[in-house]
Length: 190
Image 1 (tube, one colour):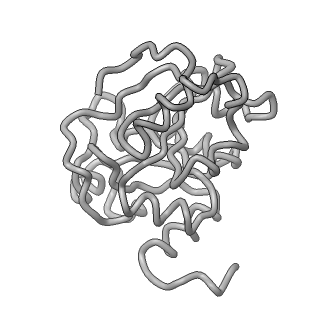
Image 2 (tube, rainbow, N blue to C red):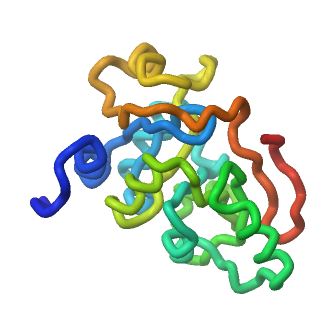
C-alpha cells in the first residue's frame, strides 16, 4: 500500500478502488458508482451490482483528457471535431470515441467505441487525480430504482456500509448528455 497518500475521504476511496472494489461518488447530476477500469474483477462486481449486461459498454470519467488517451483513439478526429469536444469539456457532456484496440471488452461491450467524459465536478477531479487514472462511471441505482442524488439515498439502496465519497452533486437535473465525437450525433439528451 502507498503510505504517501493523503489522509481523508479521497485517499479512503482510492484504497477501495485499488482493492478492486466499487465505490459511489457525486457527479454533475446524480451519484455514480465506479471502479478501476483496468480491473476485470472490479468491473464484473459493478455489473453484477447494477444487474447491467456487459454488452452495453460503460462510461469512463476523468480529471483531464490525458487520463482518457490510453483507452480511446482520438487520432481519427479532425481539428473541428476535436475543437467541438474540447469546447464542452470539462463538463457534463459524454463523448463516444473510437476505442483503442487494446481497450478491454469489459469496458466497450459489443462496441468498438467507448464513452468518456472529462468532469468538472471537483470531488471527482480530486478522486481521479489521486487514483492516477479515470474511473468507470454509471448511475448509482439498483435496477428499477431512480438514480441516487444524495449519500443517504446511496446507503438506502446499497447498504450503510457501501463505500461512498460524501459530497453534493453538481445540481444538474439530468444525467450527462451523450454525443458521438466523430459525427456530433446526440445519443442522450442532457
